[in-house]
Length: 161
Picture 1: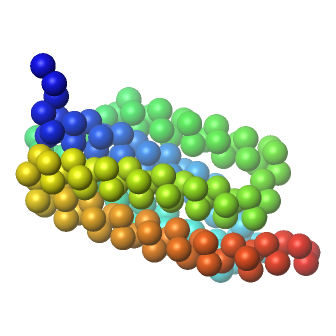
Picture 2: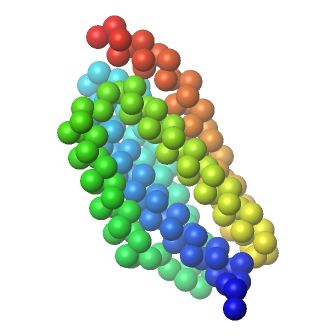
């Protein structure tokens, strides 16, 4: 028997929570690396880390409302993956330009996943979940746009140094 839309929503929300954990760890590492030479970029990324933490809380609340909980195993996997990613980028000498470009890609991946969750919440007739997820999409769209807007200036600053 196929999964119900609600079961799919729960499973995907658990994955989204783990991915938000991954994003928090990854963005925090990037923020620290940018602090000295790119303070405006670091400040906005730090702000987005806080938004990401709020997203995790909202997703956990949605799961609780649906009679479920976050997946500890998926959360641990997401965090371990992000730590490995952060170490890898530090070891390879990721430039601020690459950091912004990778962050843009990450935001668009989150946007796509949240939009799929919005559609799934609608199919499951979970109106509150849909509304909450739409607000998460809006946060990530705003961050992706900001990063896209700052990419050129970050590149110019990097080339001038």
